[in-house]
Amino acid sequence: MDKALWETAETRKGAKRKLDWRRKMSDNVAYALLVYTGLQIFVTMTTLKSGTGSILPYLALIVLVAAIIPGCRMFERRWDSLSDSEAANPEFRDRFRRDLVLLWASAIGLPIALTGIYLAIAALF
Image (cartoon, rainbow, N blue to C red; front, side, top):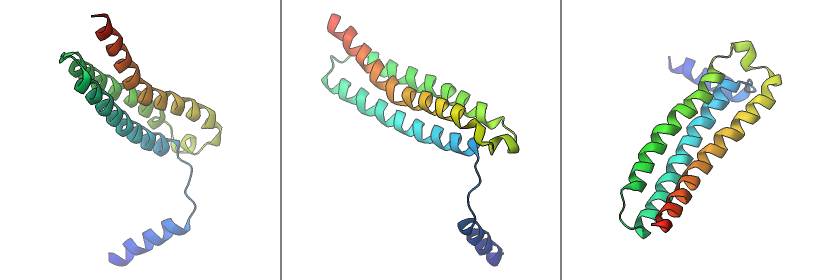
């Protein structure tokens, strides 16, 4: 058993990785969720420290966490439905890049945009 595990690891190291859009999108979704969560916590907590003690940032945090997961799952589901031959097809590169831009723009932009909206509303009142 141990020998088989070592041979598999050596085979993986020596062989060139096969193109798989499903795996790439899944990895990007995971990283985007981590970045999104970190940004959301950092930006929201910074706002809370300087804020008026309103519950609005906490509600925004809950809404954004609840909203981003289905959105990310939508991206992942689109790529998970590919067959093995489609997942290795280099012709999907443009679609993949478009989805990647949308995913990362959402992951980075949503926490910043929502905090900006909150600050604008708080400035009015």
